[in-house]
Length: 112
Ligand code: SF4
Ligand code: SF4
Figure 1 (tube, protein in one colour):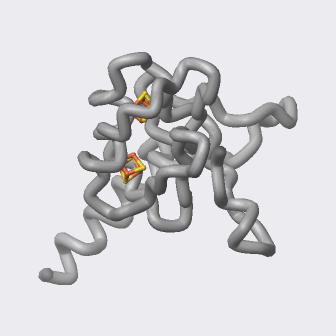
Figure 2: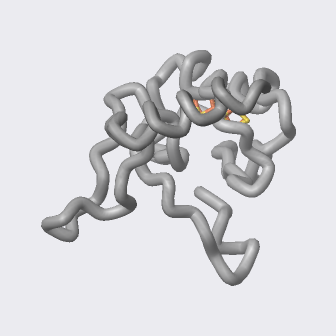
């Protein structure tokens, strides 16, 4: 890139609105996420009928069956594709708005 172009871009950037947002708003509230954001999995165990379709569709092997014909999700393997939520006939899976998934222990990333 030529020096002139670089200077022009740098000057433009000075007056442009930032594309990034603050983690918390000035009022200390969480940044709102888009309606269709695919965050942490929310599983409705009661609604689940144990058809296991979600396991078959999961591309990363993040879902396993339990002895009681329900499922568990390993969020550390999840790629948030949303396919499990799409295929579930009972709408027992939803990708929620939570994006704060930093934990100390891997076990804390199991949703059941
Ligand atoms: S697809 Fe839905 S109903 Fe079937 S096992 Fe998975 S969560 Fe349960
Ligand atoms: S969102 Fe995708 S990767 Fe994550 S559990 Fe569902 S199907 Fe698997």
